[in-house]
Length: 194
Image 1 (cartoon, rainbow, N blue to C red):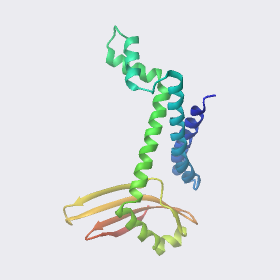
Image 2 (image 1 turned 120 degrees about the vertical axis):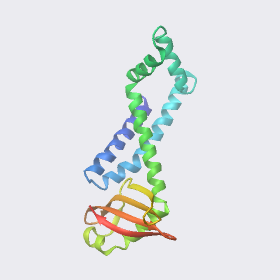
Image 3 (image 1 turned 180 degrees about the vertical axis):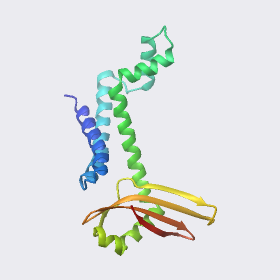
Image 4 (image 1 turned 120 degrees about the horizontal axis):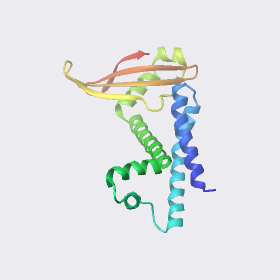
């Protein structure tokens, strides 16, 4: 059996389960699936590239694939037939690519957001918030990818930020909306429980 298929399949399943478990509030499985899916997917993709190189003598190329499809449908409207037939003939590969691309994007967003000044300020405030600690205990996790936006308020003439996330604690889970304003540094304005 081709090893790359196993790794890519397991990585895709774990990626999908990440969002299912997050939606159903099943922690710590959500966190485990999130952090294990990307390395498994990367190993699968590297094994596939090695397999493809060993089998064909060259690296995979989207240009070659499109050219091959155009030759197959040479008398027809080449561009439309090519894209449609590419999707139909390679539907499994296409959706696998979509899952891999989405998981890479989610990981990049998650890691960059967690290192941002806005999130660090919110995290410090949440860690010392007595009301949250009384509801869920000590915070273990701040959600997979918090919804995050920054904007400039014309009324206050200040930069604002909002973070919507799930806080996973020792005693439970709570959804919160954190509003921050930037004066000199970022400061938490309000914390709302959903």
